[in-house]
Length: 156
Image 1: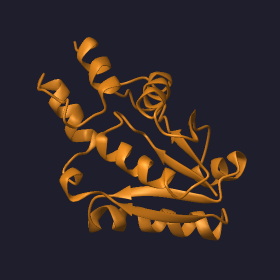
Image 2 (image 1 turned 45 degrees about the vertical axis):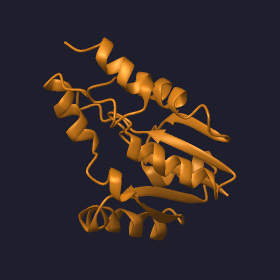
Image 3 (image 1 turned 180 degrees about the vertical axis):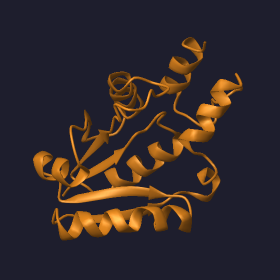
């Protein structure tokens, strides 16, 4: 089974890494798809996110990190993924993700599996990490070392 784990990952957190590790235990291959919204200026450029996530997941077998070019359902088909995986921290995440999962199935023909976040990581989000970076706070417990180094070295 080939699984696609899509997201903006701006930045990739330890919660994302946990989901990736758990999916690797059940999938033959995991493709982490980095989405980029051209209308938004992110904390980390999409190409840098791809490289950093590759570094953060290098110890896992069968992981490929790519920049997504279009709609998730279309990218799943293009990449040969038979499953989309999403990490969820709470019922709020499920409520947000549910309509997209239905469209992915009805239009794209690909199922979505939700992977619950470990309780000790449920409070960690990319937006919270971005806020901590802006406040120049220690983020080392929330992101993999490669991400922490990059963000620390590139703080304004």
